[in-house]
Image (tube, rainbow, N blue to C red; front, side, top):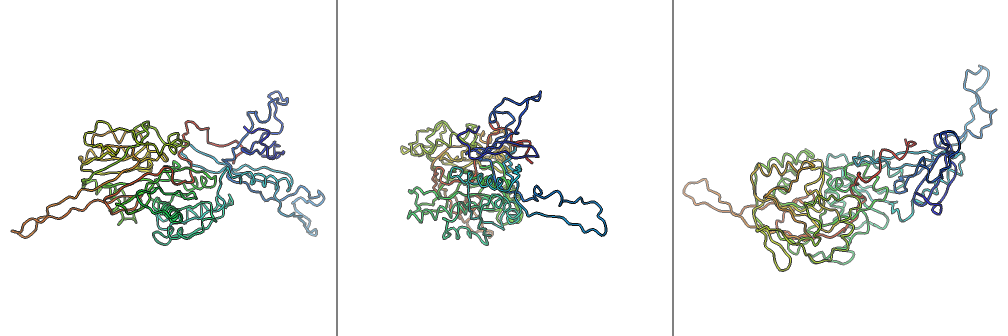
Length: 556
């Protein structure tokens, strides 16, 4: 609770026509009925701050404060007021009106629900005079502007009118813009017109004028911003993006207003793909570091990724779905069914260096939540040498340099830098992957029957069964890995009799990289711990949180 030496301002104000003592401290806004009485009517001996009836709001959850404009009749002479009855026909009716003055102010506080959805709640304080009202509004705004709250005052916003179900413009105009206006956040809104439009603008935009960059779109739009900011940061620092370099982090946080097909990144970092919830994370200045993978083909840099990188089934599914974007999210189900029936496997070799943290693994049943201990201590461990050993898997060879190699025929090879939650996979295809531990979870699905693979896919759509608990699936927690496709040949018989069979090289699969297609089959990937900060705080563990139904009974 607030302490006396933290007090910034205090006075007596009315709430719902009842006098209250209100205190603003450096960390909280607190109020209580001015006279607290016991059951027998005598004054209570409980101190103000410790009183159970005292209402206290952390400033981290105070969204905005603004004056309320209302008619002030308090100084109007009684003789000048007339009852609005039935006046005489020969008597003119005069109504004396006073100018609009702010004699009350409202605060908007955060209201949470167990499904991770956030909304604003309103409490109005009546001051009785304009000067007192102005003082309270100024004091609260000054306190909220303290650097320790790290709230954005200016944002560059990109709206993708073509992504998802093409609702991004209406989502921003109707739901998000009013919230930013309420919080007095200045915005420069740009509607993108073509692929990589946002990346092109970020290459030369004066980023010193904004406190963050926000995209209204899906995972692909976010990845475009991610790559645009990181590319510019490396270019300005004169760093060549090679497999040996460690990229520098951008100086701005990135926000996502979900308006895409899957919105896996928003699901994983907030617990829900709700536009208003994401906007409130941005307004409150939330920040969380997430891991980013740099992807190369040989010595050629391709791009950065922060969610999923998958070859085989998921890559083929994405490529097939591109021709049906008009279908929205359902296009993935159609393409997935076609590729499932094909049951095509690809030969290759997966090489990786395992995580040095022996206390975590992809099956440890430890979810990444807000304030995750695994992520909190990972920054200082990123330079440690690997000491993790493999289990008794005979298919994997172990080199002296710490690299492990796994050869085989695979239905899918997938890397997850976060759990990648979405509506189709509520806890994600890699449920226990962490946002900021400097590792990725590699999943290798060996060639199996359709029924076996279907059982794995079915478990991915649930919340309790273990989708890794199959003999044809191997998972590893790694900090660096690579994939090399093995050349395959298929025999193609000619229609004309007497001609010999002619062989040709079989096409390899493609990579699904954060919802975008990468054609290069051979990749090497490095994981960079908490390289980028998002306007989010991670999924909150409600077993350890208070009741989020309302801050108090006075909230509307």
